[in-house]
Image (cartoon, rainbow, N blue to C red):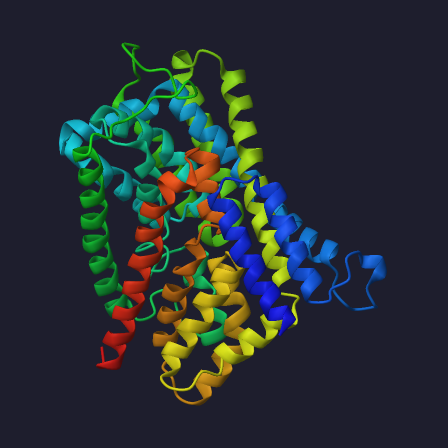
Length: 437
């Protein structure tokens, strides 16, 4: 009982401190320490019995594993975004888009850009780095409140594309070895759900932006923004080349190099930017340095939260919660969805929710006759619901490290589009499966 109270309290405190803007490098390990203390985990590895977990080891395993897996992508992605912004390439692309779809559709351009990159195989974290400079430029030209940028980035990245049939993102691939399915599992239902999420989500985003503008909100420039004004910009089609390079290389090498394809793709994007837009960069060394600092902040904040999940997974309360959720009575699709979305919420990771739950769910539900394709799609969709709570890794990175917004300003809109909309999409999928689609 004490372990469960500690887990819930630690998670609630972490969310509260995150929203209040407390440094995550302090807040996350502190909350993890409270969880470990109430669960009877040894503090140091030297004090733990052989084979038992400890607070320090569990936290640092989660922290270090994330850095190991993602640091280079964060680093090169941040530098790529900085080069695109400082060279004016992002402004050039933004101008081209504005001339064709109009300033009033600026948010739609951001959503679509993120969707194309995400569905093309670019990592979710990297998409935010790559598209943010263009988003900043578009929102400035349209004089829209910049606090909506994280929501536009998140909606285009972690909702209708991340969990859809055919998506190369890991959230759509994790179920395959457990269920014997393909990335296109239940594509008919997935297509209907994705279209509904796009239509409803964008309508909601646009409505909230228009409401804010009607109240007098507008774009507020900051000293850290890329220089604008009357400077000469690179050719629009040349400016598209770095983005196309990232998309093309990532798509071409996704299967052979898997996650490492992103390193090659982003390096390619950086090189193409330097080759074609070098004359538009005032200080390449400074741009790279600032991008590096941004990457360190982003990967540090995200790793800090992942470390909390590493401790949470070692507690008795977490094991008990998983056991209860994976054995819920009633429709097995609902039980599976609840288990995965809650675990994803606790760990702050969509992939974590699936990785922990599917080894337990898949054999049981397959044995009782649940169609594998349906379970695959529900697993993918449910993993993308509560992973976007305030402490989620992508959420922290996008709002604080990339967009540098305050949680109280940006998260209500962000949460509406990345938690509520995916939840409605999940419900729609379960309903469609229940009527035989």
